[in-house]
Length: 117
Image 1 (cartoon, rainbow, N blue to C red):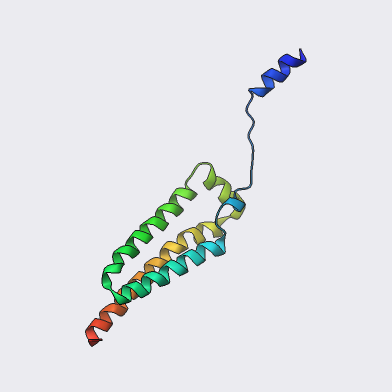
Image 2: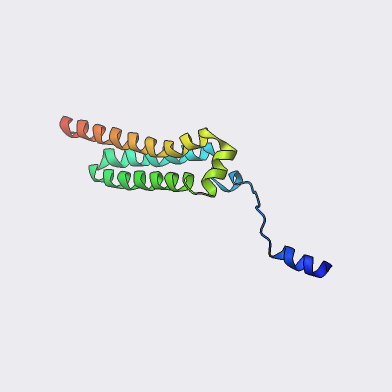
């Protein structure tokens, strides 16, 4: 009888909770990714206006990554439960930072061209 119970227990599934935060980027890392890529796009866009397309690709990539991570039924719920609302803000902040840097780079490039530098 004990062997039968042990055999049946092998096939029962149990929910397992694990920490997700140690496997995901931390909040400072998310901000840092946005700042580093944003500054790179800013300087490239000031140098040549065509790099704004690269900025748009990075914006789309970071936005999709944040959306996909946070809306995942498994990872998203767990990370929001562990980290809270600041993680949502930090996830989308990289996209906002890169967008702002791209726009500022285009403005700086236009002024530079207007001055004839």
